[in-house]
Picture 1 (cartoon, rainbow over the protein chains, first blue to last red):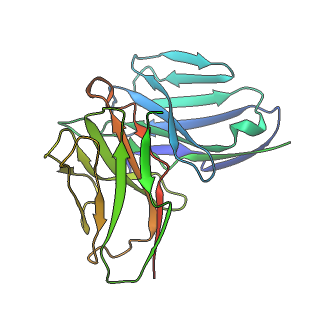
Picture 2 (picture 1 turned 30 degrees about the horizontal axis):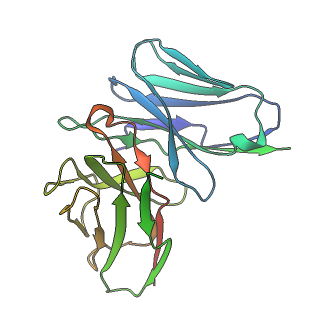
Length: 112
Length: 113
């Protein structure tokens, strides 16, 4: 079954509003990744979080890894139309060689 | 420019035909991956390869086959045994030290009717 859940599935905001997507795992993760996929495009790696409670920032994007390493969030401050796309979290759930399991993603629409 | 190329961008086939999707990379990455993406869904791993002449099944390998004869190339064949082949197929690669930082190609959108 689904090992990583993302909420919400979809969010529509006005430009300038904030946005947050949440990723919840059924198991403790060694790390978690975030990817962004623009409409009609391919996923692009954004960031990796490894440490418990870790917070990383990329301009208006803030990424957090939960203390228990079972959840993560991506927060965008003051959204812009260029933020439109689907944001995926992905974690290594399989033992042995490390492969990624992706969440279903949160689709963000930003109206000007 | 280094990167991953997938061709063609759009592919149409009749049911019952096998079709091979191309994936080539000049990033000198050891690992390569094939994912399938359906509307509103995340990416699901079909096959992956850590090194040349070696590959492993992912979560949804049934109805697919791959080969890895060269480091640069990882073609995916969608066979007639795949029950729902219409999807967006994405190829990715990574270096051994950063297997979770995957670089994706532009994808091939396959439609089977």
